[in-house]
Structure formats: structure tokens, C-alpha cells
Length: 382
Image (cartoon, rainbow, N blue to C red; front, side, top):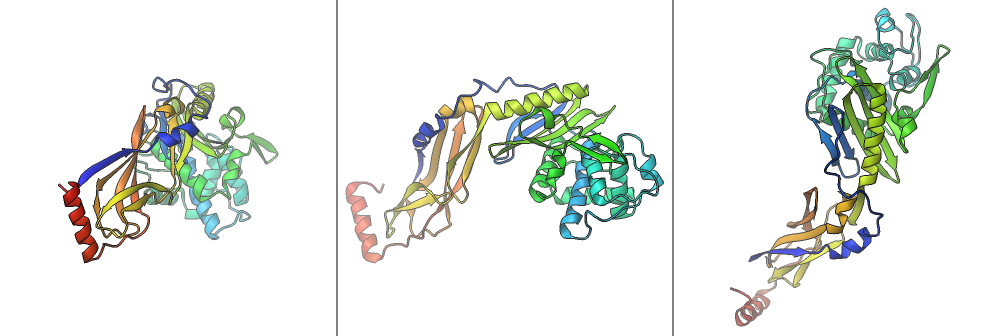
């Protein structure tokens, strides 16, 4: 047998070249943020990365986990948006951002939820923590357990608010993971993040997320600031079915946070395109068989192949199939027999397994003899 490698990508390129050209290069793009991560959610492609796995104080961006636990309880039916929570002196007296709760008030969970996601209320976050777990400390333990469960690799929570603590940290990568889970797990509650304002106690509270006004398609998620963390933002925007998620942190001012997040998101949509190359079950290649009842077997993908590429690199995209052939029969439906590889400039190679579309049995004794003799005569079997 021999290793077979075939370029099959030429027929994709005509379609891809119809896309309007983007910037000539993305390699020189940089950001003033200390930490940054931009991904395309549909493919998981990393478009921009800077210190994304470094621990950092997340400030109020950690309230995404507070909201996640609240969404989870709402979804499983153990609580409802109309339930009321008492406000303790600890919650009412907490400094920092606030929805101006008073001790003894009993706002609904929906009011507290909006206080968290729109106004970034520390008081609302503590009230939810105490209402769901009995104390903020017990709630922090739930946050840490949930972080492990959903795949946050380097995060630890000491409180429900993001109040500075040397043992309270996250990474930009974990914040992207958490934002992704909120978007995908709780679509019925995600709309709260796009609300521009909220009124409680006769006080109108504006959403602090600057991307909502400045970036087309922006609909979430959360700002953060302390003197230690600097200005940060977890933002998401969707255009024509394509969603990007951005984390930036360590900015020097709210103005810089606003301008930088706008610049990065617009660059991500403009400089990159997401392309569906092949559908699941579509024949990618026919692999030659040895002693099979059919001469070849169709190789297919298990899932649709969608890739995110710099628009400037798409003209040099190549799609290659590798397998070791001729492949001895029998081969069975669902058996992995090859690899599809997508390459393009400035992109890590993308590999996907290829599987047999239908079972092909081995020939009977007579057929095997005939094919073997034919191969010997022709010199094909060496």
C-alpha cells in the first residue's frame, strides 16, 4: 500500500473568490489591551489573541458567572423571575456600582437580574448570592464548582461581584468560554444583555456596555473596572448569522475601552470571512479499494466543514485528502479511513477525519484470484 495525498480544493475557489476582498494582511494587527481574545463562535477560530491564558482580575466581568448560576436555576424551574429576594444590610451597603437597593426591600429576581447585567450592581449580585446560596461565601463555592464543570481552566472566585481579591481571578480564554455558554445555554435570557437601560427606585440606569451603541449587531455582554484590573469588556456581536465574542482587559480609560472594542470587532468582521466548504455526508473523495466488491469507497465528513479565514488568504486556500491506499476490503460504514486538511496563508492547518459512507464487502475467492492475477500481470502490485 502507499500513502495517497490529493489536492481537491480547486473547485471550491471559484465560489470563494466571489466574496468582496478584505484587508491585504492581518498579521500586523495589535491592541492596546493587556489581555485580549477574539473568536468566531461558529468555528471556534481565534482571530486575535494577546495574553489570553494569563490570570487577571476580572472585576465585574466575573458577574457573568453570577448570572450563569441564576439563569441555570431559572431554567430548571427551581426559581422564577417573579420570586422576591430580601435585601440584607451587607448587600445594600456594598460600595461600587449599585442599583440603589435599600435594606428590607424585596425586589423580584427579574429586577435583580437587570440590576446585575445592565447596571452591574454589586448590591444586586450579593442579594442574588444570598438568596440562592444563603451567603456570598457559599455562593462563591458554587461559582467555583460550576467553573470546573463547564470547562473554565484557570478561574477562581471569592465573591459574587468581582470585588478585588488576590485569590479572585480569571483569564480572557475562560471569559470567552463563559460568554459562549451563556449565549448557547440560555438563549431565552440572553436578551437582557442588550437592554439599553433599566429603571428601578425611580432611577434610570444605563447599560455600561459601549459596544451596544457603537458596533453593528452588538448585543452583550459585560463591562468591568477596578483600579487593579483597569477597564475591561466582554462583548459579542452578530452579523448575517456570524457571531464574534471579544474580551479585552487592562485598558486605561472607559473611552479607550469603547474605542478599542469597536475597532477590534469591526476589524474581525471585515478582515475575516466564514465559509462553508462541504456538507456532512457529501462525498469528498473516492478511495481505491483492494479486493472489494466495489473498486472504491466514498469518503465523507461527519459534520459540515465551515472555516474562518482571513479574506486576503482565501485565494490560496487548499483542500487536501490523505489516506493509505489501496485500502483492503472489507470497509465498514462509519470507519475512519482518511483525513481532510485545509490550508491557507496565516492560518493553522485545519484537519477533519474522513469516514466510509457505505459498507463494501470483500470479494469472494474467485474474484480475489482474478484481481490478484490482474494486478500481477499489470505490475500494479509491487
